[in-house]
Length: 175
Image 1 (cartoon, rainbow, N blue to C red):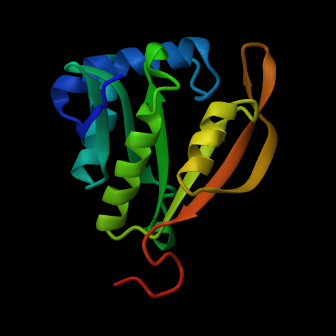
Image 2 (image 1 turned 30 degrees about the vertical axis):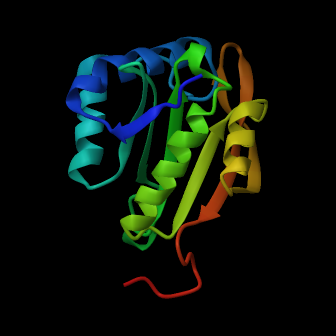
């Protein structure tokens, strides 16, 4: 297996990102969205994060986008400004190949470089062992589970909360 190339996402990547996310919305429980957003909506989301200075990455193999990851605001109130929430999605054929780990390592590095101090993962479905393992592998700690907060595919789903410090974390006052 060749190593994925990790780079900043570009507008030209949005159709591939949309296809990856569409599949997860329609078939998975990592996201609690019920209707897949179209390219225009995914472009709006990408542009919003990019204009706000958040990292948004893609992983490519042989020139094809096979996964993406981004950090965004954890909550809108100003006291949360040093905390980000992460998202990582992979094309179905790209699971269990180290691509998610490569994306997360770079996402963490870029978030630290931007001065963020905490990263939160809100993992859809407590049965999502692959996502929990990915986050554990990249330094996240379990902070709790919200039982039965989502309803998708005719069943109640939990969310798992994980967190990791970025850079100095909470040991110093941010600049």
